[in-house]
Length: 448
Image 1: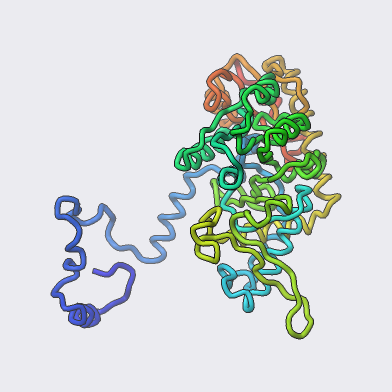
Image 2: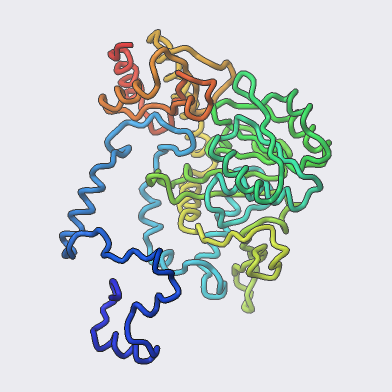
C-alpha cells in the first residue's frame, strides 16, 4: 500500500487510526472517481535487486553512445575530451554533501568552488561579473532576455536566425508568456543580415540576441550590431561557446551587456542530453539584476578569507515579487566540473583546445569536399562546425555512417526547411587525424 516504504501492517493501522480513517483509499477521496485508474499498474511481478539491475542494464545496452561510435555530431552538445582529474575531484565527499549554500557559514567549500567558477566564467567571457545556478544554455539565454525585458523600455526582442533553433524556441516560449514580441533577423550567406537588423530595430527593442560562433559554425563580426543595438538603448546579448573564447573576440571585447551560453563543453559529458550547465556573465551595470546568485569574498571575524552569498535576486529572498527570475535549482556540481576543467587547462590550454578544433575542422572539411560528394555552402570563417551540401538524403547518409561506426552530422533540413540535403559536421580536438581520414574513407565507399 505504501510503495518502497517498509511499513508493517501494524504501522499502517496505527497511522490510519491517528488520521481517523479506515483505509488508505480515503486519502484520495478528493480525486474524482472517473479519473482514477482502478487497476494495478502494468508492471511485472516484484524483482530482486540483482534482477532489477540486470533488467536496467539490458535497457541501457540498447543505447548507442560515443564510446561505440566516432562522433562528428555537434549542434549544441559536443564530444570534447574530459580530463580524468575531473571525475576524481568531483567525487570527493566534500562536494557531495552540500546541495545548495542556503547556510553559507557551513558551506564554505561549496561557496569557494562557486566563487572560483564565477571568476573563471568572467575571465573567459571578458565580462566583469558572473552569476551561478543557470539550468542550461537555452534557458540562460531566455533569462537574459527576461532581464532585458524587465529593465529596458519596449516590448520587442530581436534574435538572429543563426542562433541555435532550440534556443530560439525556448526564448520565444519565455517571451510569449511575458507579452514580448520576438522578431527573428534572417541570415544571409550563413551570418546575420546586419542590414535587416538595422531596418527592424527601434526604440521599442529591449534586446538583441546573437550567437558566437553561430549555429552553422560560422564566425561573425558583431561590431556593427553592437553599435546599432546600443544606439537604440537595447541590451546586446551574446550566446557564446566558451571553448571558442580561447581564440575569438569575447563578449567583453565587443562591449556586450550580457554573455550567456552552454557550459557542457567545459568538462561535462554528453550525458544523453543532460544535466548540463548554463552560464551568464554581465557588466557591473547589470549585476544587481542578474538571476540566480552571486558568491562574494570577504573576511571572517578572525580576519581569514571567507565566502558568502553576496547577491541573490530570487523571489524567495529579499526581492520577492520584484525579482528578475525565480530560477533556484543548484547546478553547482556541473559548475564544479567546469571549474576543474578550466583550472586543469589554464589560459594556454583553453587556447590550444580551441586551436586544435579549428585546424581539425578545416582539415575535415577539405578532405570531405575532395571526395567529390560534398560542396561547401558558406565561405565565412568557421570554428569547429561547418555546413556541407550533398545529393544524398542526410538521414540515409547518417544511417550508412552508423553502420560503419560513425555518428554523422546534424541534418539541417530538420531545423531550416530551406537547407535540405545539407549537413552540419562537428570536429572537436578529441578527433584524431586517423579518425577523420577513416570518415573520409567511409564516405568514399558509400554509393550515392
